[in-house]
Image (tube, rainbow, N blue to C red; front, side, top):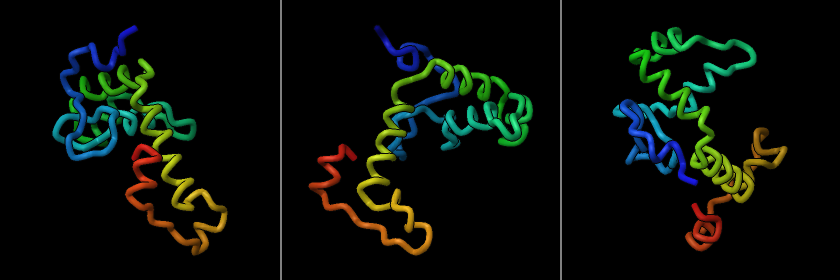
Length: 117
């Protein structure tokens, strides 16, 4: 089964070549589609696509495309999330004391390779 996010010719979305994330972003803006989708799906203060477009100074179609991309449940978003979780666990950022002065543990190149980061 093919991944819709790679088979659809997105007009406003592309992978950001300067980012380590695989998920798509708004072309030329470095705004992740997932960021816009989060604003749309917010439990506390959901925004309409029109409000998001105005807030980010984006074409409405770009926002709608970002929402459609995220609603297609692309595996790269899940992979990015899982990668971040591995990094946070390995560096100590998940430690309960981290936000109260806990230490960030740098990763060696071997650890980074083992974690796939």
